[in-house]
Image 1 (cartoon, one colour):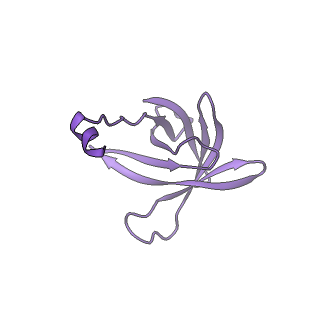
Image 2: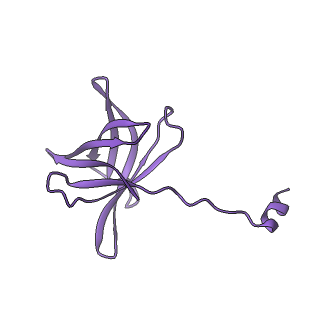
Length: 118
């Protein structure tokens, strides 16, 4: 996993940035007021650019083995592919969450699967 950003809790909005070698983006996560279903997103993700905001994704609160975190899904026509990130509680008291990226594992086709697809 690589740390690619952070979020601060400022006036009930998670504000921060995502940085990679090819991208720098200020982001805000706004809580969804009335979730339609339990599986609906907990946050709307917006990019802050050129004096405005553009909705680029959603985020969900999760818990695993007693650890709270959020999963963040972002996409935009300018991205080469969707970006799936995770926010974990930061050890740095200045930040609420550290944003990390883990490259998805690629599935390897077996010879049988390759022959069946042909």
